[in-house]
Image (cartoon, rainbow, N blue to C red; front, side, top):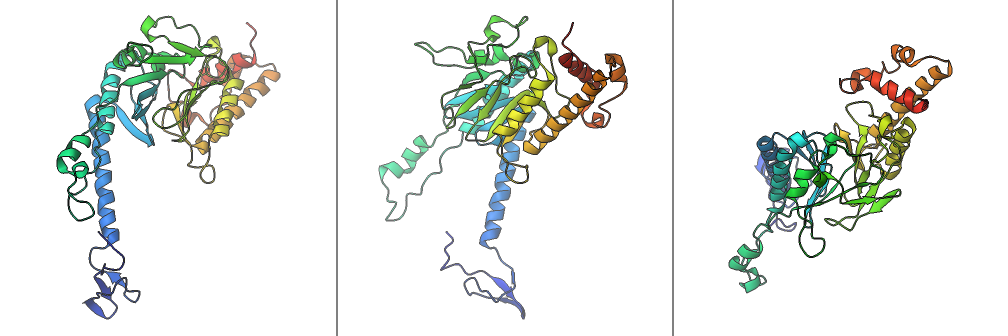
Length: 376
């Protein structure tokens, strides 16, 4: 143990390479031996190496990427839309489940993540010294039993931000892999979505919600030591979107309302709208707490792409608003949809956001046009 009144740091004095044994000598210049800082740095390097190996092992085994966000929250990338997982003593809570074709890999990845997170035994205390004593509650045999890795808890529940195939396609497989305890007998994991979610043709019955909510939000019970609130932004990406806020971890799962890779997908046929999308982005900014100069603070997980903060959301909100205003101005001039699309109103943002052939800038312009001009 390092103590202030006993540690002598071997350091180099100005007049030559001589060892100084004075405790924390202020007149010496450069340390030449191991210090408390050196030891701490080595521990930090070791911890970083362990963390890298931990998440790399999961990702390599499953062809998916697992990234720690903050607190109990992790994000799984590569299974469709981003999958958010709260892993802890109460079990696993998932926000979205990815696509059906990747569901088996997602199940294995979630189970491996839970095993790794829970397999961290408490450090054993040495059975030496007068204060410690060799008492039964700190004996090596007792500690070997009580400090053994806990069994990983199952998937308890699933919250869908939307019922798109890349966000809810894995519902059935992930629910079957989980267990909730509602009533007398254990059941599969519960699934929650907003009641305004569009019809879910093509989904098996076990993939459908076991519970829906109405109104602007739903508060869940404390889960893994923090409050969880599900928010409903009306008429944004679709009519039935949800965002999930983890209050202690300061993490917000935004679903397809926010997309750090593409323009926002506005499904007008399912009740989405450009104004609802802008309002939802403003709601994210209202809920987020910034750390410094609009950066850091609350971590916001988009439906696709990298993790964002308030500055990213503000930039995204502004570009969506600017493009909306450009389209509306041309509509006021009587221009048709093909003419507006030919004007390339998104060209200053296309290098970053027009890289998805499944959702091009032309499709985004059409969605804005239809949202502003709801006539058949």
